[in-house]
Length: 326
Image 1 (cartoon, rainbow, N blue to C red):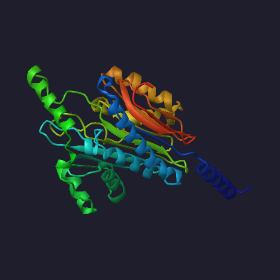
Image 2 (cartoon, rainbow, N blue to C red):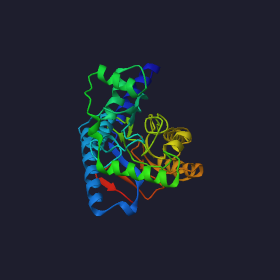
Image 3 (tube, rainbow, N blue to C red):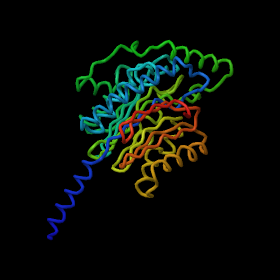
């Protein structure tokens, strides 16, 4: 057989195997779960939101759609809920504003888009994707990102859209603690983030993450969520979305480290994620969790906090939702 025919046969076999991939979707709503604060009523509402996000994302995959669309759809649902620190439920900065960050990455092409410091964009994940698809850049911030949003047809919301009483009172509590204990501003760790990773029927992976940042943050602080390689990463072998104390996740380049272990060391995704989240991050002084998936649809959801809002649709199409260690 000629080399040309061999190459054609190889391409055909690859295409057939890729088409045979079984779609899988994993989402998270943050690892900042405090068990004592999780009332039955709140747990019920969070579970319902996670199920709606899974339903929206998996509908894309089930119909033969791509992983990038599935990730986007799932995250939009979570951004629209006031129960997660992203979009509608974003926390407040020290100055009483909401500043939103997001990123997305296509594992098949390794294209990526990211935004930070948004104040008037309802769904930051959609703008992150627009940066990826409609610009030559990867990362845009603040007023520049919103100017780009306007140029590509995004409508703005009034900043009051993001107000929730729960988040406002959380800021007031942080400010009181700061005054009474003379604590350094912006030092309280919060892990409120949402994210999704997916494998589609073509065997392509994608990942995305969105957040409102850290309660009482100052000076334009940006965490890991919009940083490619730290909060979000995807390639042909692995996709990861992080949720944790951002400063440590940036320093450890968590999302990329996990995928590098999978791709180069051939470490199973569950073990790779566990090594980083349960060993490296705590040794640095941080905490949090991740969701990860590999090209065979194997998943991992390790965390080292009280709990992590999470859900997944497995290879059998079964829906799973968990909040604590259940």
